[in-house]
Length: 362
Image (cartoon, rainbow, N blue to C red; front, side, top):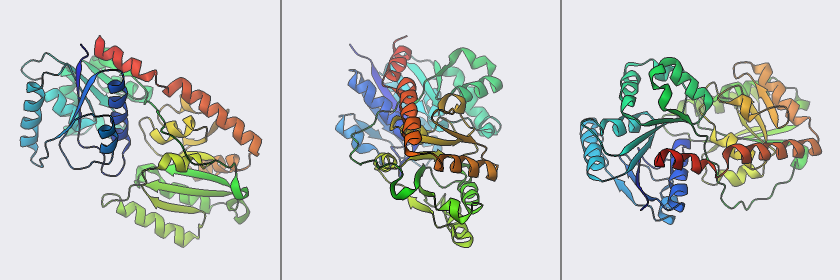
């Protein structure tokens, strides 16, 4: 009899979200391999609910803004559910997952660390959350960079640490790709409007180009711009107007981002810090050139066969990476895109699910 697995997530995305998309993807892959999969969410947000619905995966909602009530209700749900495995991503769900085990457990606990921000290891709250990771059977990181940072701060957890890259399972793509349409390099950035995602640096880099150089590129940025991100979005828009940068356009988040990426020549991400960037992984699987800051596992993701690297805090470095891509011929662009695809198939194929199954069945 296949094991019963509960996925614990704050919600199913309030308008996209890489962690929510990835946990839904893993759940569907396990469901398709015959596991009995369920979801528990404790806050509003159902952006990816339709995916679980199509897979007939039950979703239970225990919405509460009271932290203590949430801790007790989630703990009670898990302990009474007769699950074989409980999987969570992100700090708060990981804490709730671990907290449910206090007093003993008969199920396996797998927590997922999605980013590697230095400050996550320094605040009082994060130290408390990390203390509770002693109750986890495995701590899954989605990059070697994140794993190494965890071991640096918590060497006692080294035996629990596992790296599993994000799975990239593309839906049916209906858009058509025309290389360098209108004679321009079309770049897509899929990232929320946050300072750490570096929209300001990108705008400054483009503004530093000559008019002739700007004519070679078009950048479309798609991202969440809710109340928490409005300040950055507004500042970026003002800067675009002030500097007269007409070839970068800021868009809201869209549900069909992969079809949009498919029509582009390149994907870019210029963050100061990142876990494993979903948009880059998906762009690679779609056969796109990559323009990326030196973050996460950049040494594995990008080399001179499939993209250009830059430093997020160096405007000239960002400018040069973009112009290097813009100066490629169509033949060179297509060759580098093919290299991206080959890397992606090796790193992010559906064999990733076998690594999850290995943890579940150990």
